[in-house]
Length: 456
Image (cartoon, rainbow, N blue to C red; front, side, top):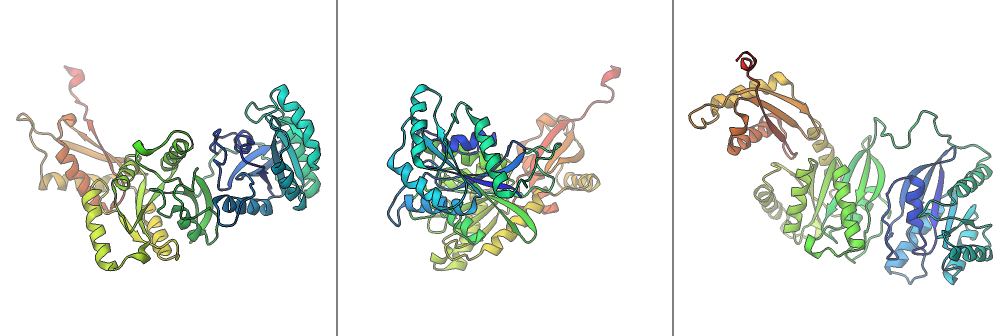
């Protein structure tokens, strides 16, 4: 049994900084601007002898119904219900403010153990505020500095004591030979959902999960950092990464948006499959094409989902037109899958996830060396490599050293002279002959060694 600990408190008291410190990773975005965290984010950590599940939450704020702050508070309240222990964080430098008192009462009424952390106590200014925190009535405050790593030993001891009290001393002890950072062999398939702002990425994740796990709404830019959620689809464990909307570089502002874009780009780099979500009412804009090109350069498998399909009139004709446009505008990934969906109405989700699993199989495909060389001989018979300055180029041998994406090496005489047009001819032939559509292909040329060079 793993202890679930929700880190709660008002905005800008250092919850995300503490979350990163305890997990030992920079999972949550941190910035001086308040309200950067909006969705709840989970991360694994080892505290003392226990494995725990930490939940970083949005700052608790009193807000009217229908506002972004109200939706953020709903996510935080969901974390409160899910958690076994509440880690209440207050700003010792600012002292106790009315918002702290209100939400300390909310934490007390939950009936769960509450640990009070007085953050930002790295100087004398914070000490007086930590003493003032006794008035919150949630126990003795523990003076810490999440940014500087001070007071964490006392904090971890309090967490262990609280868990031992509610579990009777039964926990999930850390395996002496285990490593919390080690990737298990059966780790889930990592899928990043990317696109321009306000195309429905968070709504799509909620539809796939069947619950309101992420904040959604008509406002653009609701998602700030990449949030991962886990699910199982037809026996395949998956981890979905909802990302912030990617705008043109010139429009990205410094500060929180800059951090959000960087987090989304990292999600693409560490994903295996990328779902590019486009708006059916304004599909394939320049930014969509740039994102598709980035996915190809990173070697990820790509699926394009066209959202808001329920608003399209002539669906069959529009789909054919989109497929023609994709073949024309995204030639570097021939045969990319195009799946119309409606995240709001939960339509097309089965086709989308089926396409994801299919493309994952292609992305991992390996071709026997014998088949590759028979194919290479046939390609040269149909269309021999051109002669350069009167000398022929001979393609002698071919192998596939890697998959994910499929990567091939051709050993050749005068490899550096092979024209780019002939490389494209071989790449297109690989896609057609071995059904490698919709995934990036890496084709590298290597110069064959001259067996007589050492005898000269």
